[in-house]
Every structure is written in structure tokens, then in C-alpha cells.
Image (cartoon, rainbow, N blue to C red; front, side):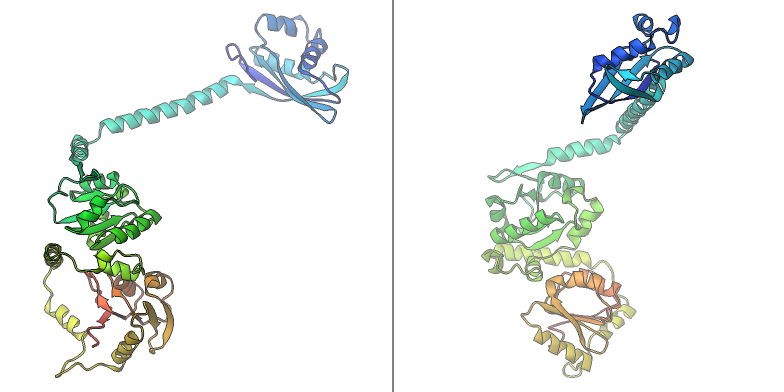
Length: 432
């Protein structure tokens, strides 16, 4: 209903019930007719409406199963006493047209209070906008200029004109990300050698680039990131893989998170083995690199090893490290437990499975190696050692230390930067 707010101070709301079918003109006629002369000349409805002290009477009425119900609204600019007298008079109405009827006043609303509430709500919205504008104007100017420059630094590389950082044309190592916003976020973190594939259909530019440069795939931690990785392995040579934390996207990571992800990247071959992508990986990933790329890769890995050697091992640490290796007297001699791990690793060869072993040497559970991380997160009761056909990664060692698992045995050591002191580590080479 539309109520004229220009002179309204109060709004009388009443509920109508009639034993029969009635319409709006019937209700309005009953209100005027049955209150006429009831309240005296000063409160005669017709006179009040002519003078504008009572607004247009609004009625909504509907019929169902031979009976009618509806709502009556009467705007009033009278004072409080006169308004409540008028509202009480409505309840004396007992017929509408030919039908027996009843009107009950449900409420008398002070329209000014409602208006004040609306004013307060709107004022809050306007104040919030004003405060937001004030904060925006106070943004560090250097940051604004930096972001502007970073946007200008994005170039378009190759025939496919892919968004890329300014160092991509000359850099030996290139980071492949999903979209332009990822390239921008890496630029904000000071990384200028990223290039975007712009969708799940990997462009030929990326495939060609992968044959010449050291490629690190850096994708989102969701289903989309997984699909892009699968296609990348089919059409390009991927040397290293890293992903944003589960459920997050590269474009929303902080500089610290980006650095951590890139530091924890794993070799592409290891990723293929861990996640069972052998049948999906491109032939180019399984054949020898070109001489030029092989040299670049060796140089790149050497530089990474130098960067990660950021402290000198103390004598105590060296002794502790040496204690983890079996004694050698003209040949390797293994303890019964080590001999058991060697036998178990041989049994698991080419199975891509993992065994969880208790402190008595019995197998508690055998699971696929690609599920090992999730299993270690949830179920490590009575587990003293892990023996698996796969690459020992930083994540597995961290979980072993967290779950107080004393020994980890795997096919070979991956790109591990920190070996937990509480975990004994053995590889196939160590046990041969």
C-alpha cells in the first residue's frame, strides 16, 4: 500500500474479518458510515479528510471459501489522544455491506520513529562510505606508485602474447602460473620471471619455452590447478612443481607464502611418481633434455644447493648425523631392524605402496604412497616407522617428526631442506 507521508504522524493498522465476500468500497463506506456522528463534529472522518488531518484510507481485502480478510491503514496527523479515539471507533463497526464483520486494531505506529530509524541506518551507511574514502586517501603513496609500476611491467610474450614478467625473455628459469593476476602478484613479491598460461588449454609458446628453460609450475591449490598440471605434463617439460596451500589461489598469497611455496617445490619426476601420473606425462618429460637445457638445469640445481647451505654444521650435529648411519668396517653392516627395512623396501619395489610399521616390526597398514601424507595426518597410532616405494619429501619428514615417528625409509631423498633431528632417514642407496 502507498501511504502519503507528507502530513502523517501516526499510522493506524487494523485487521478486517467478514462473513461473506466484500470489496474495498464496501469497507471504506462502512468506516465512514458507521462512525458518522459517533465522535462529534470535531472528529468527523469526512471533515478530517477534507482538511488533510486524516489521509487516504487504504484497504487490502481478499476472499477465500466465502469469507473475507484484509488490512486497513489510516494515516493520521491528529495528536495522540485524537488518533487513539479514532482507532477505537473502528472497532465498533460490525457490518460491511450485507455481511457481518469485525475490525480489530493491531497497532498504532509513530511514523516519526520509523523515519528516525531509517535516518539512523542511512546515516551509518553514509558514515561507513565516508570513513572508507578517508582510509583510501590515506594509502601509502609509495605503495600506489609501486603497484602502478608493477602493472606497467607486465609484458606480452611469444606468438600467443601471454602475460609475463619483464625478465621472462632472458631468464634461464621461468615460473608458469595460471593467469595475469598471478603474474601481478608475483611482481608485487619481486619475482619477475613468471608467465601465465591463461586457461587450461596450454599454448604452444609454453611448450616451446619448456624445451629451453628451467620450468617451475606454480598453480592454485584447487581442482583447477590440478587440471592445469596434468595438461602441462602432457605437452611440456616440467622440471619443478609447487602449489598454493589447499583451497588458496596464487593471486591471493602473501610475499612470505609465495617464497615458502617456491622454496618447497619438488622435481617434476617426483611429482609424477607421487601422484601416479606416469601414463599422463608427456614423452618429452621422460626423454633426455637437450644439452643446453641439461647444462642449465645442473647449474640451477647447484645454485639452489649453495643457497640452501646457509649454516655450518656443528661438531655435535655432525656426530648426531653420523650416528644415524650404520657403522662401516670394510663394508656396511646393518642392525636387524635395518635389515628388515631393506627387505621390506625390496618387497615394495615398483608397487608405489607404503607400509606403516609398529615398534615390534609388524606392518600396521599398507596404503598407496600417494595417500601417505593424508594417512600420516589422520592415523599414526602405534606407528614407529614408515617404509614406502617413493621419494622422501620435506612434507613427509615434517609429519613424521610431528607424529613422533622415529624412522622413514624411502626409495630416494627428494628436495629436502631441513632434516628433523628426531627422525632416522634411510634410502635404497643407504641400505644397499
